Image (cartoon, rainbow, N blue to C red; front, side, top):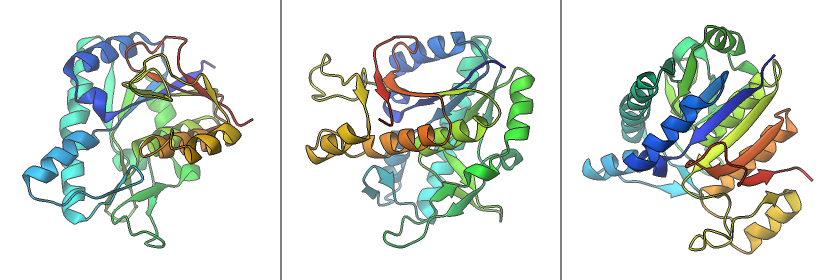
Length: 259
């Protein structure tokens, strides 16, 4: 069985029309089977600000009240998702836009309010991901495009971290086939100095990760990304790489390893 590639694309690339077009070109040329997971946090933040809805982030994770959930649904499942699907279809890539509620693909539980109340934020139940339905879509030649909304099973969508969605999908599908997980964003990899394009870190393991956090080199949104990478590797994903969206096939990037 062919290796499945799960690719997550960040909001900064979505915000940059030129970078997005380049990414979509590259992703459409990747061999199938493949899955795309996208963020869109910048757009959601801007819309919240226009609507005078307070924006609160804690270590790269969005606090989601009812109004913010409505905005996230409009932006993630609507505007961003369908634009990506249209761009992929234009390039002959038979994409289908999905949320966690569709086919109950991404069941989740509302995160506990202790120690931090994140509101309507969902933690995906990886063991309950509907891998049967997802495999059927892949077998049909479809390319699933997931937004970062999961589903509580009781009629409520939940906002989930897009990195976590990609990790959960990769882990769940690794029980059926080999899976590679690729986090794509606007930089060449995890950087020691974001102003120096050559300062990317080729490899991070758990020991070096602890040091990088202590030094403040890894912070904010990169923390959940790397946490999810380690979790995926511990649960059967073959390979995790953090790299630039400018060239998915590039060898340059940060490989995440357990040891």
